Length: 501
Ligand code: C5P
Ligand code: C5P
Ligand code: ZN
Figure 1: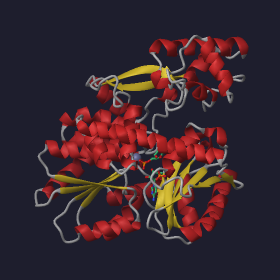
Figure 2: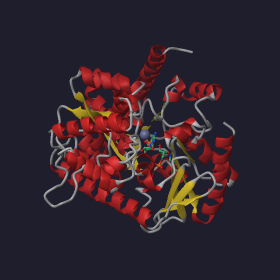
Figure 3: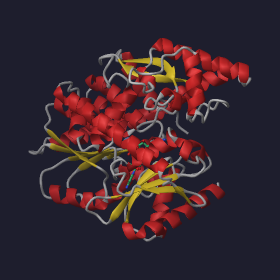
Figure 4: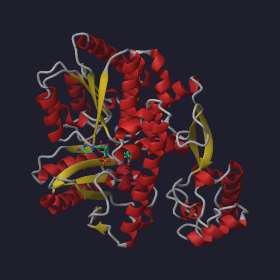
């Protein structure tokens, strides 16, 4: 087993070869480089990093943002680029479809991705991964080739950042955008929500450039009123407060924290001052140790998280906290304004940013409406091993995945965490459902691998669609009339994963 540093060296040396080959090919071209990237925060960050890096080299480029590299998208790209003198970079997708791309795309391309490669079911298939590495390393960079975990240690924007930095050391300032992307993919999974693996390495770059500051904060949802955030926290369970928003509100008021806004709504974590947060921290530690006999260090470990603040952004802006920054990018991507997100991530702070904020507001509202509807109408159904919901005409395919993530990670009072969640929504103008699957990390520990499960269930259901992702988060699409068949089959596959591990 090679060490972290050896693996990182190998990754960098392969990136060096890819960059040489990129320039060799670029020098023969007349047309701009085509970058295809994913529509979520990580994909937009990846696109912005690549765009900025090429801009700095004076290389013309064009960025296209798409929801997913499905078969039809690949065919369209093949049509658009066939016989033309094009050079393509795929970022934040491509590994899960590399075979398809190899077969269909007739112009040179590079893949900078972090998803489990096509044909691989788990990161433990070392031999098979090595085979793909040997076959594709001249044009394909993926963390699993080097023993790094693409679901928690580096994202698509992280891989794009390493490419950019290898191209030109001056791109080290883009490290912060790589972390925004990683945060968007919920990769801050280390102790106290820290970054681990290659993301931690990227964080060192950002720190070295004095671009980032890490502060302690309360581990509560930043979206919900604080009393609800306390009552429904996934990580902090305090008998007497958990599950009860009224008691939580009383508790906060007793601590003399001003929790109400002037219009009588309750503040969110983002509205509280550092001092008020400190009062809540001390109050909760006291409550836990006096009333529940929990050691202070035990509660503090769960209660305090790292927040990453960008020193060059204005303090009152949504771009100051990387978590908020990534929400804003997600909002732009999912409210059909991806280019505004990319411009913001590339550094534009003018009128475009105002538009981005408007997107964020609308996006938050549509997420909250979706979750309220699922709750109030009891829309989450169950089978033996899975939970699922149909977005009907209330949840669009653009946000069905984010809704599933929020349900699993933040709003899980209406869910069971011991069954993975499958959300689906009809694709506009297509007779198909987009499916988004999410599993809590405790389930992944018990052997659930959603990327593998989706690929297996597609196969058993004799469906042609591409699918996959990561063990805790994966997706695909299914013809509308096959949805029940697919759900039956995925229920069985998940059952096998749980029972056979
Ligand atoms: O395609 P990509 O890798 O960028 O997207 C990952 C998706 O999976 C994001 O929507 C992210 O919120 C979700 N995710 C998750 N839990 C994880 C890792 C990722 O829900 N542990
Ligand atoms: O679309 P959604 O957010 O549900 O996707 C979850 C994860 O699965 C993402 O990382 C996404 O890129 C990946 N995915 C994939 N292939 C698909 C659909 C989703 O790799 N066909
Ligand atoms: Zn990603």
